[in-house]
Picture 1 (cartoon, rainbow, N blue to C red):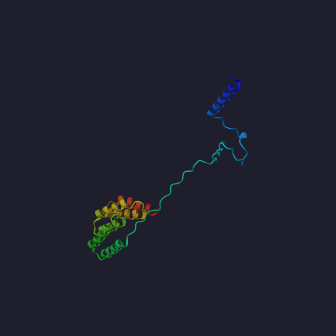
Picture 2: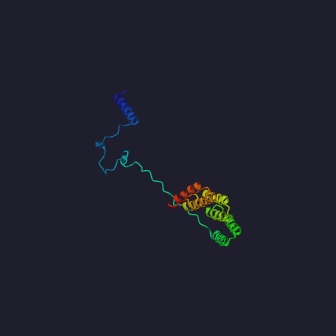
Picture 3: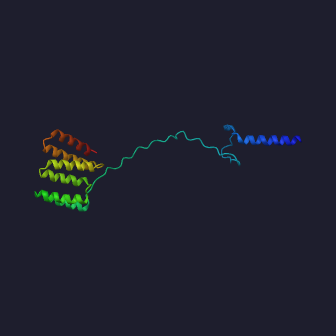
Length: 178
């Protein structure tokens, strides 16, 4: 056999072995100058992440407070109930608000209105229940919650539960300042 054949075979084997093993990372001195185009088969250098890459956690945004309103139909029924209640006709006033509640059963303002009528009828236990129902529905609306707490406070005061009434008044006051 010829010696050139062995040398060629040895060179081919060493080239194949070199392509299998990874090369150590290049030193900064061996990198091409800035702006130079890489040649074919050269890997693009990856830029180092900026020193300020640590993400800053965002502050959670508070949603604007919810504000319950009456629809035109329920507003008309509430106005009718006010007229009836001022005339001393509490049963028809309660019936008008109950009609409004059939339209908007989840509106805490209507439960507060019904509680006011019940309080005017000298039924503080029912007024308390209406106020607490309104509290359960008024989540997110500090004004409606404050009105519900005031109704609860008044119903407690009428029943002689003054300390509880004072606590409810404090809760209403805290919500009113929001």
